[in-house]
Length: 294
Image 1 (cartoon, rainbow, N blue to C red):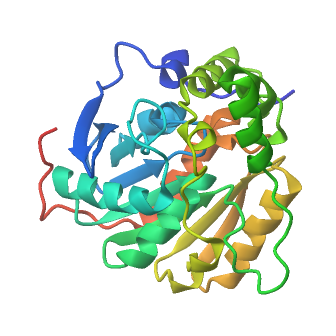
Image 2: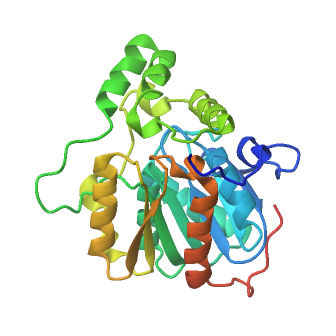
């Protein structure tokens, strides 16, 4: 029988004991963010069609030892604007300034891993360590790029011709969105996040605003790196994760048992334990810079 985790339902779905949302007006958008705990700062970056609520179990677990900050990236969740990884980097820098964070650890899940890598390369003195969860291809393969594991152009056409409901229904059947857990709360949370996804990158003219693959500069990242994959993540993501870990002199790789691409929801306690162990070795206390009021 699959190991049953020890988290509470409220840790996944949220509830009265969860900190309230805050908002930051910056770079022409309104960003939703949430902060809890004290200690070295850890910023959590969600993946495509998701939002900061995906991190509910991890925030509850890590806040015992860390200052946990998570946000809805622009164009996702309850943040305004159109999705843009290039703008995400500037948004994150402004959020750090607003919260008085000079040193942070970065956790990026899936598409959020691209933001984390870009930020770490742009601001190396700020980032104490980097955790990449189920990262996509970063364009550093040196040969013919692998086929995409996400049919983005098809989803754009589907959303524009048939609407976002049709996209959400099809996306919910994609291997990248399939949960392995038996906990119903995780399925409810995932459905809520996908339903909340505004889909502006799919429906607006011009499509997805992104950094060209050729500019991903993972080799320029200087800090310690942990790459995570779920044991049952799709083959392309497991292969990419292992390749990235082998390319970096300070990188290591870990697999979350019984987890798919959304392994932070499939096995949240094991996932949080892996994060906590790595962060405890590589984070830098930010005691010189006191916590700024929200």
